[in-house]
Length: 94
Image 1: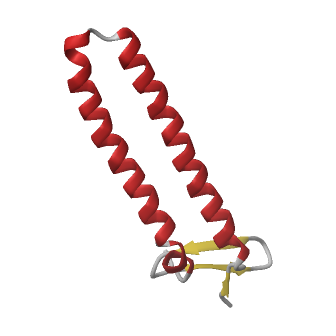
Image 2: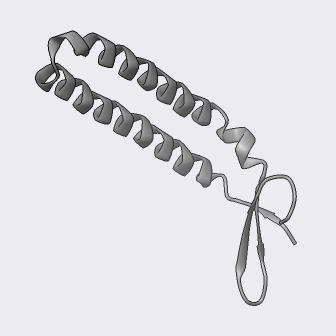
């Protein structure tokens, strides 16, 4: 017997992804402050360009995860046996 996870899990996944975005913004903000404050002025532009690209990639990845929540939900199921609960994600049972 396979069951779908409750719909409330979508809200939990959304909250998790939003917290990841906020954490990413705070982390990159700290790195930006450190670069501006402590790194030699001739290297700041290179470091800032690299960090801006990484920041953009991470934010895009997080946004894609948020957009895929309804799709991912379709592949999560669970099964309750007499001894344990099996969570399954993906296309086939492993």
